[in-house]
Length: 175
Ligand code: ZN
Image (cartoon, rainbow, N blue to C red; front, side, top):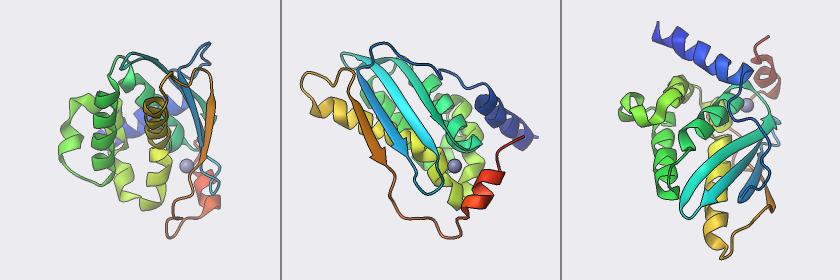
């Protein structure tokens, strides 16, 4: 039952992504691409002081990568950068299959992705947007006067998961 609800929630975010919009004056823009499977995420953050006041994204890819970043932008609104990093560590724990984050309301819809922890080859898809968030916060903190409008590009070149089949990855796109 819960599994069905979670699956519907993932497809809902994939088909009707939240905050998939451009942003006129982002503080930082990070684009992250997985060259292996072709998933792409462009994350735009508006940061005021130490707080994320707006989070939007662009991109394309499989349902898991796009639903994860859609859910992530919803969860980031109004959070401080430290709170955003805390959320990231909770999501990483969820992807490691830990029990506590499954019950953590702070994760909101993101809890629907708990099943991905059992699919090692798809965890990278779920983490793509979070890797972009991590780079965005690092870049923002590195820069003294902010990175107004500058677009930073990254490729996810971490190890290819064993058993990964790009053809299968594409086929999981819901029709
Ligand atoms: Zn993917």
